[in-house]
Image (tube, rainbow, N blue to C red):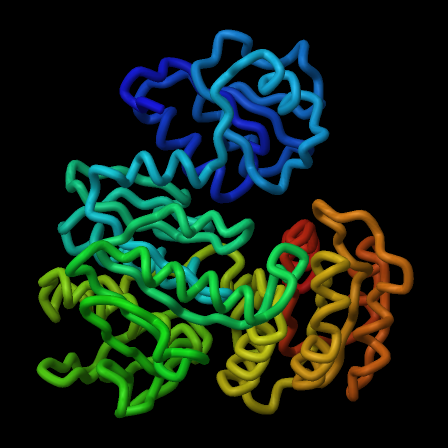
Length: 449
């Protein structure tokens, strides 16, 4: 795969958040980009507005027969008609991770992996490098609010990459700086056991280039097996770590804090996004920036101007009477951090969470954890499970979670949510999930305003 000789590229699953970043990379280079996705979304419409040709039916008559390269997402089944046609006709067909591996071969690579936190940390790092004037090429798994996109380029031969653990694709990357945020069990349909997933994260750290650096969250399970020539540990507040936050104060839905390391410190950093977990994410990102020689003043300015990522503790409404937060949280630990942070920032407000479980396998494997985290709220509404790539599993429904929740809970179809909201008061509302629950943001926002 010689990226310099590609004139046309075709994406199967172009609307995926990671796939669209690579599509934008090629499009910016002047390559003719086209592709397929199952449904039109705001993101695919934006890609079309940028000049990419996209269709929404699995139809070999709609494909680009002149393409030099076909890129597909592992979420696409092997039986997909277009994927089979390209393979049967001898085209070069590769995964997204193969392209990322090739793109970063000649770049200084900063990768961010972990069950959760990786989108925020990678976007924070990319913003720190861009806002400070250092520069980077960013391949992200979320839409940055500052830049309204998930990819941007730079003349600087540095790449910031969100390293996705799904399908073990992140193991193809050889970073100069690797960040590891978490190793909690997920994707057990792929990995089988939590131990196998931990093995993959450990292997990720073994792929760091010689003389490279690992920046890992303090207290990870099996941390002695995490391997790198240079290793730094970061933490929210544990002063045993190499870098940690201290003197944390809540300010208007955000935070002010100091960061300490063994031989440097930055005081009075202001961050205007919510979530105590995002203070910890900022510690990780700042540690990377400091390692690259970015000054304290530029770090403070960049964190102060960071507006977050769409659907990551995103304030849709925030005033004295009402707060509405939308978040991508789809794992018990993410929900725990989301709900506990929201309640701490807005004490005294009744917290209602509307959650859409994502995947039958994840619901089956983590139902107890989901119930425990959701029980931190004052009231829970569950939507039916969003299947994504999966077929239903007998006996696996949202009731598996509902039956174990210890606060008032009910299950409603997505279409009934706005009608339900018209009849109730929700001082602190959270919508969460990785499916199509984001389609409720606009109607709920209009209703509450």
